Length: 494
Ligand code: MN
Image: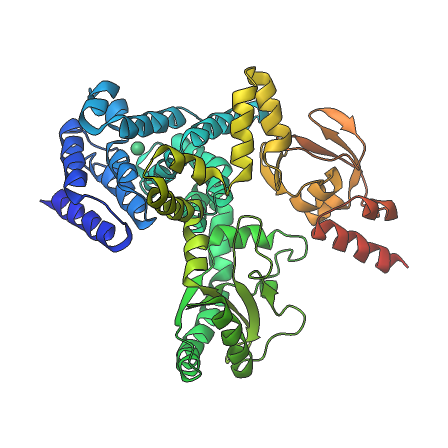
């Protein structure tokens, strides 16, 4: 039977990446789900069981624990069949049942339109679920990945709504949790549905650049493997292509402004080694083989990790076929962190704690340690009984590294802390920055140096004619795009 084969594949992944999983228990949960969903079909005609199986496979790839895998297999049985919460408690224990309940709660969260209030409310519900147990969100992300993979079976209107929600809530959430693989997967699955025209344009126009980059990489890969080994660095060398959504976002940046030539990472070479020291040794060997490009050369995210914990050395070198090629150097552990983020942490933390005390409850506390913002939100949730107040707290302080600012049409822009309406204007479009006459936030006129907050709806009041940026804007803008653009205009004028 076809589905049985998929179960075997799941077991194979579990054996490969998960620790301490009782396969008999996983099979029991599988059979229970098969029974509960008997006769049910997905909209694409698949047996329903294909869906939870796929969710469990994703969770297994992330290396999650037995309870999460079982809850993944059962995540739809309460919603979609006659099985009750009590049935699950009796059969699989309260931990599994609680996870399934949490997933159903998050599923009830819908992003309808992009109004500020509803967006924040959706986030709030999700955060409450996360606060309870981060594993709920892992299951929800895996669920969303498979739903996006099978989205074409849904009515058109639903497709767009779900894909938007994916771009606006789930992908940023995966990013905040540092699950890079889920983030780019979700973005690229949603992109063609939400921005069909732009997707076609970008894929068409970028094809020659991807091909050129690939030629370089194929030529370099072998040389790198050989020379690294010769110098005593055990490394695995692979290529990875940039996702179309992230390419599209980058093309819109003021400093790129749709110049495909300015993008240097259509594809990148990824080199994985054992230790951080090997990363630096590898960097030296690479630069002897291929000359680094002056000025845009090296970024050392090992010495200075990104806020979500990302570590790697990035360098850009001249490829044998001409043009720049990006090379990313990292340890296997840093790779694990970059791809699976919080999921990887969760796993490490659990192992550590179990060894110490053997108690499960502490595991949940431990998992949040590395995620200050979640911890903070958790404590607010406990302190602030009034829902309005909590929404305010989430809105103003929760997402401290990044603000989600909305255009009047409901498009979302990620801006750094202290960004102003001027930064927003240049983030939307370089040209908009040249027509600023004033700004409204949430319908009220504000000064241009106003500091935008997450959830703000920002509207630029436009001049009739193109006008020159003002010198004093440089005193309050924070994004590179705005600074550079204003500086350039001012120099031009002198
Ligand atoms: Mn589901």
